[in-house]
Image (cartoon, rainbow, N blue to C red; front, side):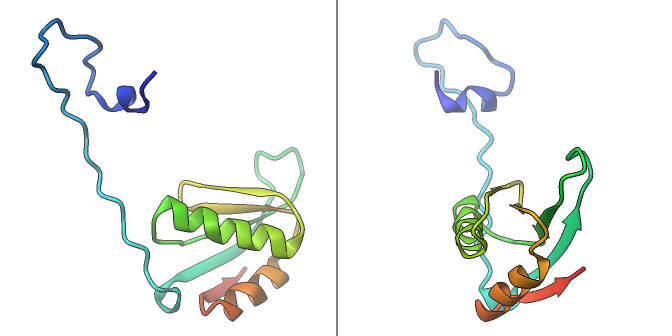
Length: 112
């Protein structure tokens, strides 16, 4: 199945061979330089069965750049995590270490 099927504005099938689907073209947000980013690092336990995660929010940029930053943080902390919807989730309480890593990468960081 095509990845674009969810963007077809409710049209499932057309018998017209010349019909072209109108897709919602959402422009990707350009990634701001690290110096202009204001990231917040917080501890989160909500909806996680009591498990702690470090939550990094405030990233402005493309999903690819978000995933690259998440990969860097996960490897430097030696833990797992994920990146989606403009948030990076790192397993465990690594707020201090993440704050230091992001500061070295020239991000403006506020550790909560």
